[in-house]
Structure formats: C-alpha cells, structure tokens
Image (tube, rainbow, N blue to C red; front, side):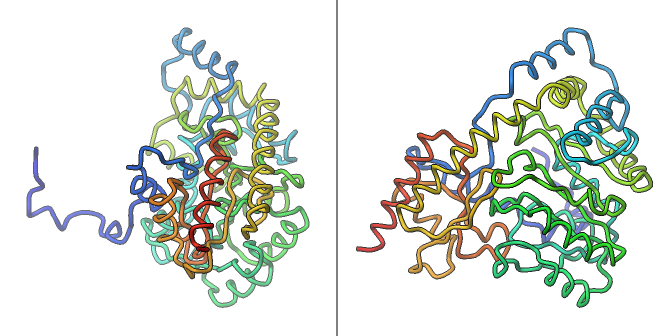
Length: 393
C-alpha cells in the first residue's frame, strides 16, 4: 500500500485538523459490537421506497436514460418541485431557482459554500443536527452557538436579537425546522416572529426543512414564505419517502444566489444520476399520498413512545414532528449523557445517541429514533425502563 511522501504531509487543507468524524456515526459504531443490541440510533426509515417510485427509476434505466442531464437537474423535475412547493407549502419559485443535489447533505454544503467566506460568522441554534458546524469550519467560517435549552429548544426572537447585537458581522443563520434531534417544530406564528427579526438584518438563512412532511400537531410553515429574498430553502425525499439511499435533495432561493449554487453544483457533481431524478420526478408528481402514509405511521409510533415514557415517569421534550424523541437522562448521571449511552448499551442492550453529539446544549439528554418497527420501539423502551429500575436499586 502506498504511503504519503513525508514531504507532502504538511500540504493539505489544515482546517481539516479540527474536524472530528461524525459523532453520531462514531458512537453508533462504538456500541454496535453487541449482537443483541436494539438500535434506536440513526434516522434511517425502516419503511421501503414506494413501488411506483422504484418502477419509475427502473423504467428510466430500461429507456436508456443514462446520459448527462442539465447540471441543475432535469427541467421537468425542477418544474415538478416548484409545483409541489406551490401547492403544498405556498412557496413560489421558478424552475431556474431550483438546483437538484445528491441528497440534502450536498444542498447544505453547496448553500454554505455559496454564502460563507473565511472569517464569516454563522449563527446556529443548538442542539442541532451535527452536519452544519463542521462544514462552516471547513469553509473557514466561525460558528456562533445559541443555546436554546432554556427556551423549549427553540430559537426565540429575543435570543436571535441578542446574538445579532453581540455579533454584528454575522452573515447567515441556520434553521433546522422541524428539528433533529429534539423533534420540536415552529408554529406559523413563531416563524413569522423570527422572520420579522431576520428581515431587519442583511443575513442569509439556510432553512433545512427535510422533515416538513412529518409534522404532527400543527401544519408546517416555512420561513421562506415570510422572507423569500433571504432564505435558501432545502428539502428532499429521504425522510418522507424512505429514500435515504437514493441521495436526492434540492435547494431553492433567489435567482442571484442560485446562479452561484448552480456553479458549485456543476463543479462538484456535474449532475445527479438520471435514474434517481426519474424516481424523484415520480415522487414529486404522484407521491403526496406516500408522504401522508409515512406521517401516519410515524405519528402512531410517536404516540407509542410517549405512552411508554409517561408510564415510566421519564422526562422528555415533546416531539411535535420528525421521528426523534429527546429524553432527559437519569439525575444520577448529572449531564454525562455519553456515559449513560455507553452503559445503556452495555447493561441492557439499547442503542441511543447522546445529546452532546448535537452540541453542548444537548448534554444531559439522549436521542432515540422511532423510525423503527413498533416491536423494536417497545422492546427498546422496555430495556430503558429496566435500566432505570437498576439505577434505582
């Protein structure tokens, strides 16, 4: 195997020195040597991609749809996305304001790369999915962490105003609504209040709404409805249509910034695979019922989780969306959710993700995913109850 020439060991992007591997994946791998482990760790739907979507991809392959598409995505697919956004969420975009990406992950990277320069500050309310901060740091930006643990795990207008006053050079804000890991989601009124604050400042907002279809207790309301001229809207089909492995996402925004996003897309991936776009076109055109069915399944599982936790007397953050529940750990551990997660896996065979993986403000909590069968959920929570009973002895 080749070894790096010693003279080249200093020749690389030194910003990568401070970037740790995904804490979520690392912890999942750390505890996965237990063959009896019930894993409620990753946000991986256990549902299958709907048959009509799979058939559309197969048909595209059979029709030899295997050549370069437009770099921003097939025109008919981008038009289908704009039709969906208009009818479903009252968001108005033109096809030229949409870029198709390899998953929402690439959308996030491309959006941040388009707006963040070295030295720029970006506000991130935490706890939050652990992808945004490393990307900002790779790009040479600086993260302004806003702790939301005292405000119901939501960014409030007051918190945002304070952050903007203390950091007048901020160029962007990241919002993940509905939220991974807490499962909270913003009401229309809360979104409007945030929009009024943001509109006073010349900042971009990266609004990651990948779980928008999985909002249970109220209608999802996009920030892009309030301040479309400042929002880079991100979505995809991974969660709503069980298509994580297809790697399909998209980003929308004002035409001027989207020209830069298109450029990044062109140089990064050229275009998304044709058969993936064929599947996405079918999902965006004829797949709304699939999203509703997924939501019904996850809401039923959510209610099962809450009933079990209530019976156990365990404190948790009310998940009004997604397929996650953020659970407070036993007081005997203080805020050491990492050790709690290790012991939970070792002693009773339950796999969860420590809250600190989503930022310091997530300490003292664990995240469970109920994107699993009811049997696994019930079995896993029975093991959590057993562990808590052991702690009380």
